[in-house]
Figure 1: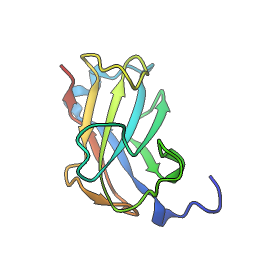
Figure 2: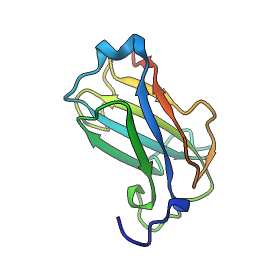
Figure 3: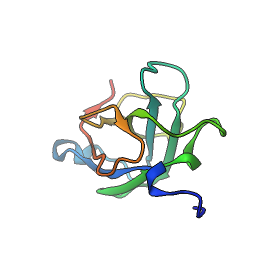
Figure 4: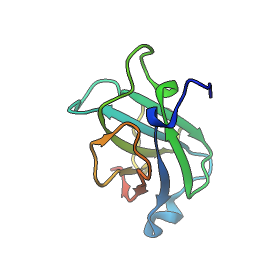
Length: 123
């Protein structure tokens, strides 16, 4: 992190796993925390952070250093989700991955306590 990264330019929170799904957690998985620009249903995400072999509960922050396209501002409202990905490849979406979304999605960049529960299993 550089001194230029201020908490005002980040989204942070905690990611946990629903107790019903704890047995499905594969400790070799990678966790992707994904921010999509407000209103963007498809296309590349605005920002992604990959965390290898996450241990839950996990504190995270997402900021300008996680932007997919450098030079774009990390600002405004975004939708936050997380995916525990078994093969660690962001491009593949295999069944059995654990997925969760921030329940009050559309959150302003700079927000804290943007907590996500991995509570769905991808089909």
